[in-house]
Amino acid sequence: MESLIFHGVRKRRAIASLCAALVLAVAPASPAHAGGVEDAFNQMSSSIVTGLKMSPLGLAAAHAALLDPHVPIIVLGARLDPGCSAPAVLDDRLATATVLAHLHPANPVVVTGGYTQPGCQAEGEYMRDKLVSSWVNPSRIIVDTTAGSTVGNAQATARYAGSVAGIAQAGVLVTSPNHAPRAMDTFADVEKSALWLVVPSTVN
Picture 1 (cartoon, helix red, strand yellow):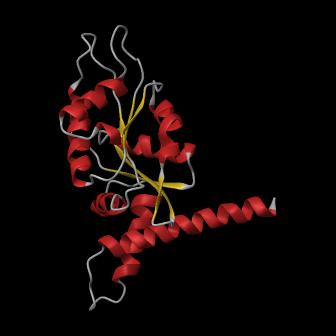
Picture 2 (cartoon, rainbow, N blue to C red):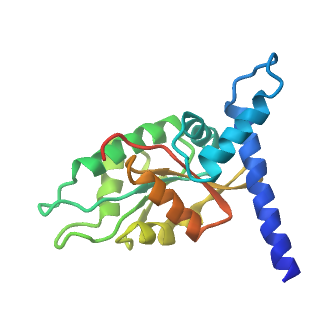
């Protein structure tokens, strides 16, 4: 039991260290304000660690985390239309993911979504094809075709969280703004040792 407690404390300290490192990466230098870094860390703690992860600082932290090529971009799917085309919400997520993938060309891109519309390809397959058509290298793309829900997305892909500079595990999610809080909470429930950040799309 003591060893389990120690292991949990060590994980929390690792995540705190990662937050501090991201703050140093994204917080503006302010020599005249001695409490600048501490204030930024407090903001990071409230806006990221506790779930309010869509602040400007949280978005900057996501980009900072992606400077490490081990951190994945995980794109969450949405049910295809009956004619097998994508709803606007999914194409918008993919547009956001495409920009992110081109800004961070060394990171793996994970697409997750199963066969949720009879007679159609899996959401993950559609997402892969759309990204490849937008010049994202297919060798970077990891496809999950098993997930039928947000919980399924997390169960299938949370394991891809990568280590930021050997400090702690992290992953960056791409989903709709109104879905982002639930997605991040779900991923955190599945992989508690990782810090989950988000780059939201625009269409809900």
